[in-house]
Image (cartoon, rainbow, N blue to C red; front, side, top):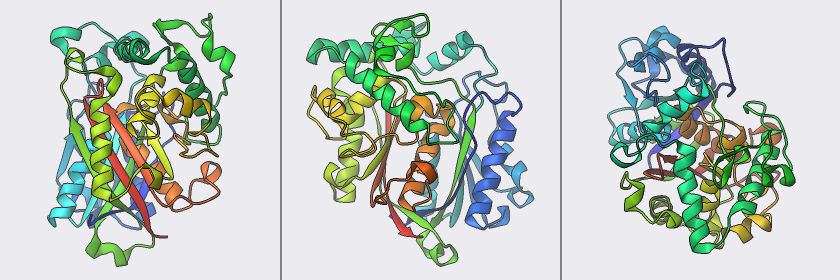
Length: 388
């Protein structure tokens, strides 16, 4: 592909009461422009990944990015919405513009301000990403509980594997200063229902659920013809987006069909297999989603992912480290920011810039798997270091 990430920005994720949506967007934007060594005047187009669904009153916010730098004024700005894959939708839209030659330098920002509403309000807002004709009133914990129930019916109880995933990702977040939660948890806690770990939607406990977070991330993407201007670059070996049916009733939930197909298409485009991937960030909105993603990546056959998790193959020193950032589970999940954040985290690893998160052997290929809705939208990127 002819598009490359040459700079990035990333705010802290968390309950950021003092920061508005606009403040988050402009902070990540300024970081990315400075990191790339450009100004707003150099940018040809702007994309914003933002779900909203009533979590903030700002229904038209793509031009908030322009407030970050006076040189961005009058640049074309577009908001992309694709539920929890809104950030990747914005990246892929920018990739199309860059690869077509219409845009030489693109700025992509993903952002969400979620904590202005209470938990019930956020739950209702996120529920708008489900199929209202059949699933109206269902929360997303209830939706992903359906995935866990289907998996359990087909292959056996996934509870222990889900708990191990939570333990791993909380532990990983301890090395990420930008993560929402810096609090390790142990296996007994995650396996047990308690006042501190209540059942939310059987079999999902609180420890299986991602956080309600504020945050933003940004990347600068340029055309191959511009590479000589930049000191660092991460290239896209593949970028695939698959959209599946919206209703849960139309899918075999235990097969994770959309994500699996997106991964397979990305591998084919990149000319690789799972054996070539050195690190991955996957969409663990709920721990069952990471377990299903282990199988979608091809690390295990259907129903066999629990053994991979139990053996530690997805841990820092395992065969394929997954979610070294802490994942959505502990890094946080500001919905529109998540897909962009994944690309930043993998780019940092590939260029040896991940701080305490950094793998000792710098990875050569990284993968992002970002999902929207109940595995409705599945975005997969395969990234590689090019310069830096």
